[in-house]
Length: 141
Length: 141
DNA sequence: ATGATATAGTTAGCCTACTAAATATATATA
DNA sequence: TATATATATTTAGTAGGCTAACTATATCAT
Image (tube, rainbow over all chains, first blue to last red; front, side):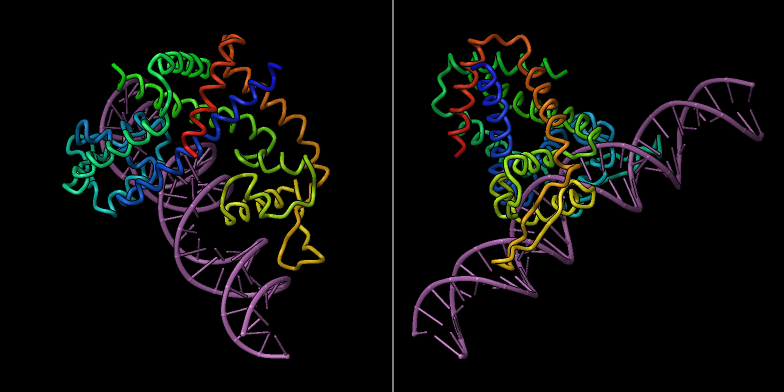
């Protein structure tokens, strides 16, 4: 029955993203980070001094979310903020040494997660899976 | 390159679950529901008078989350709570008429979402996809 | 029957995430 | 130059999600 298959796919998707978030959160907590903060930092590891609007785009979330995340990361000493000299409306976000040091351990968590998720799935299958995922992604645009 | 494929899969997964949640939230708001509340209600549509612990298991979340969700749903008049006569520790959750009425529109939202997600993916492909998803699901257990 | 332990739920406080509304600064226009 | 509009961020209040600590009730064992 087609309906059943569709439901299964939808359900698995939910379970996978939920469970990944959980595992992931647990690992990040050991680094004193929360889910999502790693993604914000990853933008800064590419290059410092980014505005909050740029972080919004990168995280695909709304400005108040960035305000809160930045506040939390600043309080924990991973980043600091500086008002732009040219345009006093914008805040520029910079990494502290403590923030820079997180790059490697976070990348190792990402790698671990990918390996766990795709364990026992063969290279040919991964290609098929990627294709299907990309198509679903486009379906939602 | 294998690494790239793995990253793509992981990234697509994130984007899909993020985007689905968004779309989904938008549709549910028209029914005056928030993401996740539909899932709680779906347990009640199977049968009323469930305890909060049972809802925890169904939603796979912690007790405080259920406390809050139940409070919100109660305030909006979709459910009501009654203390168990036999065991005064447990609260039993019941649907109001307003809560019962939501079943059909919510199921229609679910169906729409599945169709959007799987649009253009052929029946054979769906079977393969389901298999791969189930395997990933098991990998995370 | 009393004391220890287990179970159900709540509260407080943190996080991401949202919308709506406010603030401050910059720029465009009359 | 004064006014209007656009942009960047913050605040307030909502939600789901978490942990840790607390309350109340039940049950089990001594």
